[in-house]
Picture (cartoon, rainbow, N blue to C red):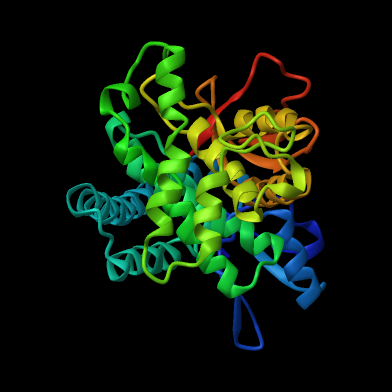
Length: 355
């Protein structure tokens, strides 16, 4: 056996370990080589065969593992960025057609949605792409693509039907389409908006509703999601100041996806924040403004995505996320080389970003 590899019983596995060989059972592949184990993967293996012996990389080869993982992650990220960039450009062209002819190509829009859903099946690389830092001028259309993906993810976790998932994804993609009728000087303003400029910005959800409502054969639920994505459960949102059950389900879902992507992206007036910090901030807001049931599902889904992932720390170190506490999202238990670090006890260390 390779000296950089060790064989462990499935009960000895820990989140953060990296598979040195694919796992198969009765000819069926369970997990690929080089997968970073999280608690969900470990439980999956145990259910199949609790006596299974698994090959993982030895910690002595940690530096090489990290280097190889980063190289592979960057390659995957670049591939995803290229694909999602192309989808964003297609959405850009659709919006330009609306500006010129006040018409929308349902065929082109359907292709955007289809491509988006196909390319976002791999949650891990998709999430890295969503929170990846990019130029501010890429924000508007890429944000719409990201919100479509995140809304679809949350809709799946909630258990929506296939039909509703498709409609929800359309609503996510089109949620900000009303901004094509807002002066770009206001949209791209770096300084604080005046009260009048903010009033104008807030009209985008009604403008978007009117645009989507007139798309031939488009389901009404899509336009309602576009209209209500800035409503908040305590009545503090806009444009109708609706509360709780009066807000359309799509509006509640898109509200969560919209906030998460906006806060993890570079914008003209604000730099992106760590996705862990964003979840922590949104957790506080969820108590009154966001639908708490949907938020809880989103939070647990994101936690499952992040456990076992590698992150960059402010110290310059690379670490693996071993365990997360939903009551203290930004301070998980980490594995740094062969040492465990609990960020709850190390206030001087924080996560800057996913790798």
